[in-house]
Amino acid sequence: MRVTRSHRQKLRRLGDTEFEATLAALAEDAEIPGLQVHKLKGRLSGLLACKVDYELRIVFELIPTSAGDQILLHTLG
Image 1: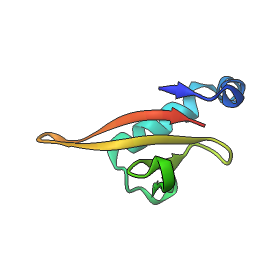
Image 2: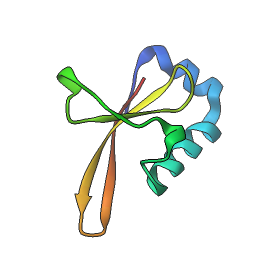
Image 3: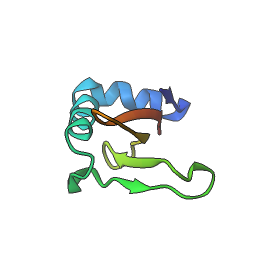
Image 4: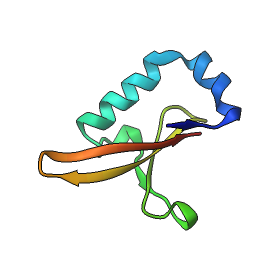
């Protein structure tokens, strides 16, 4: 996963707890309303994003498999 330079410090301040909680919720059910999962447009078309907090988003892709959808993280920013 790539982390934008401007958000490295924010991620350190945020700590692993909120970030890991968001990833766990995303893995459990990507359609939880609180995550605000939405499709992206433009050059990121085909990818999805969800919120960690007001400023921080996770960009990811859902890959269908026989065991269910897998989440491929692209970037954090």
